[in-house]
Length: 349
Image (cartoon, rainbow, N blue to C red; front, top):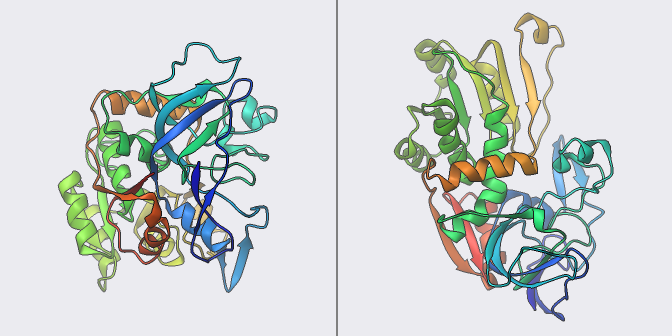
């Protein structure tokens, strides 16, 4: 098999050839047809997450060479001896957020929150989808995507699930409870779609880029706000009365500050993005406002299955996407790093 691998943090990916693995036990070998490129891949490629003030969280557990790619769709080409009811030639999307199966989080069905994860393409020594082939440890991680475009099916495994899991944390809305999607990149656009499906109406979209705001409006956002404009927070408060929930798909100091500035009493900020930075707030503001700050990390296998039911039923519109050859993985990471991509890029080996 051929893969695009990290051999040094920040350096261009290299093509590597290796023997195609044979599935053992309950494993399945997938021939990768589509592998989405995610902002998390940018952070893994960089080798750290920014914590603000020049501080970094290094990804010291990643061993080289490392194959990224956790948004995967492809064809079953071989199965281990313990696998039943999975036929070669069938195609699936792959749930990558796999845990140890033994800890408290895994036992309550939240493998995505496992402290000893085996996440495909993200965890050390677990190769991902920037390759012609990938091993999946068990059939339960294969998801039927119906008649969905296969490239989009791949993207749903992170950007879709991340948006869906975050929107589920918004909770029950009243008739006058605005939800704001902050950051309208690939994941944010998925957020617009799932907000429409879950809440029966589109969210408000906020971003610094007019092109992304225009795309969000076309996708169903009920209003848009350019956060780079002077006085935009005051305008937002005057026109809406404040947001009940802000889902921050960027996760930067600037976006968190904006989210806090437009939040009404009793509201919640759901932080999804990993751009980086730090925040500081007076503790009395939590009970006085009162407000909630919630972190959201992708979603569980059960949430992925629930999401795919909605997707298969055609209840969400496709986001903008483009496909590129696997050999363009490095260029795609750079384009994503510099904000040059609207929607999603999916690599095709």
